[in-house]
Image (cartoon, rainbow over all chains, first blue to last red; front, side, top):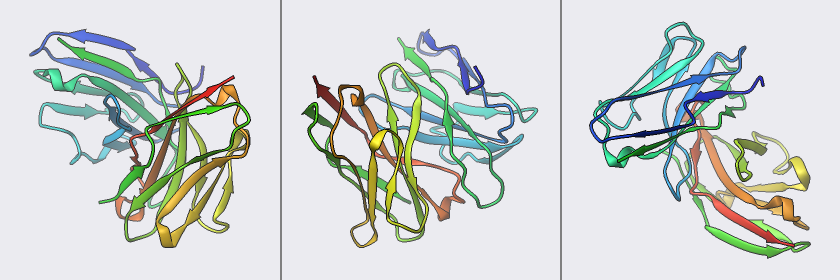
Length: 116
Length: 115
């Protein structure tokens, strides 16, 4: 399968624990995006990378959220000190792109987080 | 900042009925417009997009959408739905102000087509 992959697909954790999600983009895609989707809502943009540079992170929901893409390939999204309100589906997408152009974003299956 | 409003959260149709899902956006500048679809158990995937030119765009599986700039609308249509069109549909906008980098989605419309 050459699409975007995300691991784990499901994560159940207790409030206060840290969690980390991984996203592997389509191999030739230099842009990678993270979104969050809660029940009854559309995906909400969190952050994105172009290669290893994080170009937009002001939409991260709080300082408990952080993302990395150290070698410009896979990315991780970490949530520290989880809260019940963090329960959601976390989606990753990737695309080609440079400068001011837009290219289609391809989405992964998501990681569903449940915070007890 | 841009926002997207989808008129219906749930739509139920019989097979062969015509479909129109409403989408309005708010943004004063240049935008790209999209409809994404999520079939049960599957990833979000692009149904169709509008960047410029002919405001009537055609997508996969017989779907089309019309961009009406004066109404800030991008409604999705299909003349005759099939049971396999049961899915959640999301309208999204991508604006020059964001460097065309981010998508802003509506809340989605769940379409159920009964056989």
